[in-house]
Structure formats: structure tokens, C-alpha cells
Image 1 (cartoon, rainbow, N blue to C red):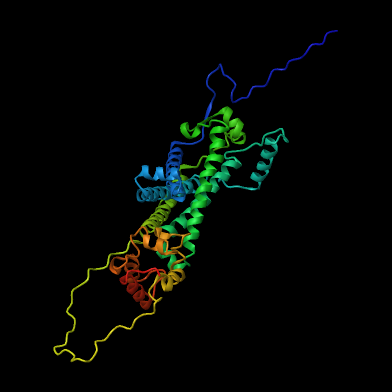
Image 2: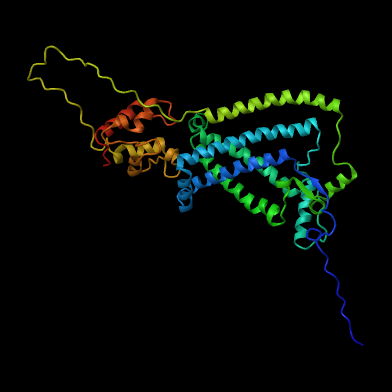
Length: 406
């Protein structure tokens, strides 16, 4: 008796199954205003990531090429600042749109995470490992999407706080120790790198690589896509439970409360953004030009042989870098102007780097204290590491003597 092999047809995925009938039904997921908000936020995020990371890794060849293509480091920083302002404005709008949906339309906050999301995450892990045969059933937003949303919220808060500290370093140093500024720089760069990697490795995988989800372009998902990713929401839609209609009179009453309230809140936030970007003028005004004055000259000169007064000679090591000023700058200025922090591009940890200066120009100009940035800024006063009058006079005398190293 010959054996006959049974061949079972391979089940077809509902995502790739060809359809001879009419196009499957589509469901609106993202209205146009949602998509516009997403694209504006994405544009600001992309510009911030690009212009921020090239500053973080400015010594690499690729970063130098990008900075050169953007017009230089100052132009790159200006672009970065404008992108940050755009993201803050989008955040103000998002708070208003979120408040309208929650207060006026009384939409259930489906983006809030809960204990059930932990259970769904565990089920998804077991399903992906092949230890569970049934895929977890999820609603309007999956636990992956909730993780992404709240990661963006957390990242925006961290970047806003650290960005303000870097944008306004002098004001920050008036309330916090100087170490907070390089710490904010480290946190800002680290969070930026984490956010970019999360978008590339997590968001793009779930949206594009895992399956080509076009809803952010078209606004719609097919019934097959809804059944695969959001079956509970699809069930609510078909049962007529997805949207709860609001009586027109009640809707109008809520609008009368919401719009004035949000207008005041938005105005306060916009004022906060203005002070965020204009609170501090970091540029130091130039010293007024010296005036020619007539000094006292006696009518009767002192008769000889009275010797003319001479200045008391200073110790040999008093007015040299190694003798005095290396230790003085290390004590007063190393928090912000060391080889690690280099605030304003200035490094005072060695004689050579001190002479090279920073973004504001030559810090020490041998023989010319009036054009030396250290004299100009310290003479203006209110510096986070303000030198005493005696220390400033010693530095001036040292520069006038040619700023010798030894």
C-alpha cells in the first residue's frame, strides 16, 4: 500500500493577502492637524539633533564637514537655537490641543500608562520569543507607543532645563555652583544622543521596518492594519463605543471655560519662552576709550641731590605665569574654563591655551592689558568668578610687563 503525503496550504497573512474585491475599509487614525503637528515637531527634532550632535562631536571629520556646510559654528548654533524655539512653540500648542480633547470633548486619556501595559509588554515578549501563541490585544495606543510618547515628554523637560542653563550661564551661576553648567552640558548632550538613537532604533523600526505604516502621511489605517495592531479599538469602533457625542449646549459651555483659560496659560508660556531666549545678554560691552587728563606737575622741581622715588621691585616670581597666575586661574576659573569644560571656548589650564583665548577673543595680549579680554570682563564686574581689586591689578601689571611665563 503506497503512502500519500498530505499537503496543507500555507496560511496567508492578512497584511499581504491579495484582494480581488474592492479596497478594504479604512479608519481615520490621525486627522490633518495631528499630522501637521507631528511633522513640525519632527522637523524641529531633526534639526536639533543634527546641529546639536555636530557640536558635541565637533572634532570628528564628519562634524567639521557638516558645520562648514551650515556656514560655520556660529551659524550652526543660531540654527540650533531657532529649532529649539520652534519645538517650544509646538509644545505650547500640544498642551492646548491636549487640554481641549480632555476637557472639552472629554476624550478618555488612552495615552496614560497603567499596570495593564506591563502585562501587555510581558505578553509581547513571550510572543516574540515563541513562548506564547497569541499576540497581545491592544487598543488605541499600544504600550510601545505610550513608552515613546512619555519618553518624548521626559526628554523635552530635561532638554529645556539644561538648555536654559547653557543658554544663560551667568544667570545660572548666580543661583547654583559653577559645576552645574558643565553638568548641564553633559546631560544635554547625553539626552540628545539617547533621543536620536531611540528614534532610529525604536520608532523607525516599529513604524517603517516592522511594517510600512503610512498613517502619518495619509491619516488612515486599513481594517487589516487595525486588526493587527489595534484590535480592541477596532472592536469599539464597530460597536459604536469609540466616540462619545457631546451635547452642543454642553460643548459650548466647556469651550467658554477652556479658551479664556488656555489663552492665559499660553500667554504665560510664551512670555516664559521670550525670557528663556532673551533673559541674558552674554556679550560684554567694550571698555570706553581712555581720556587724556592733565596730571599734577609742581611749579618748583625738587632740588637735587634728593633722589627720585622709585617703585619697589617685585619678587622675581611675583609677576610670572608659573610664579603666581597659574595657581590663581586654577583656583578662581577652573570650574568653567578648564580643559574639560572650556566654557566660551576658553581654557586657562596652561599658559599656551590661555594665550590662545576663546570665542570672545584674545584673553591675554602681552603688553596690552586694555585689549585683553580678562581685564575687560573682570573690570566690568559681576563675573561669576570675580577677582579682587588687588588680584586684577597684579594681572594688569603682569600683562604690561609682557606676560612672561617664567
